[in-house]
Amino acid sequence: MHLYLVCCGLNGRAVLVGESETEPVAGQPIALANARMILYWDDECGGLLGLAAKGPRGRTRITAAVAKHGDEHVCQWVEVSETARMEIDKWPAC
Image 1 (cartoon, rainbow, N blue to C red):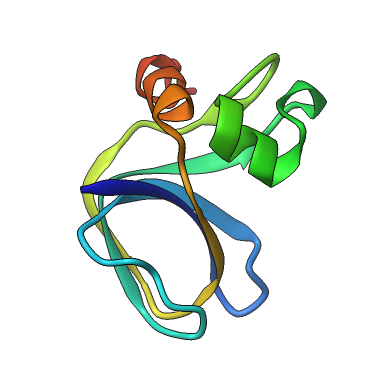
Image 2 (image 1 turned 120 degrees about the horizontal axis):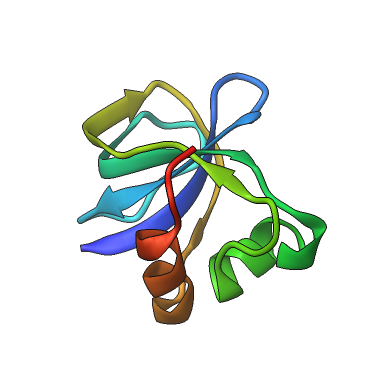
């Protein structure tokens, strides 16, 4: 399974990270496994793409994981690098 950062909801403000066997499609619903919500990412991350490339840094806040999460509308998404995956996996839940 691939790990994705997905901006969801009608305005794209809900940022989730989770696994999916299929690539997300903008404008379509999505189901993510082992999903966590990114509440805040620190400037040290370098934005959404930096977070996906390098992982969380500084005061980034990520929730605990849920087994499955679904959303009705994907606004944008980015695949998470293996480096960032390892950092996200060990990042403590707020």
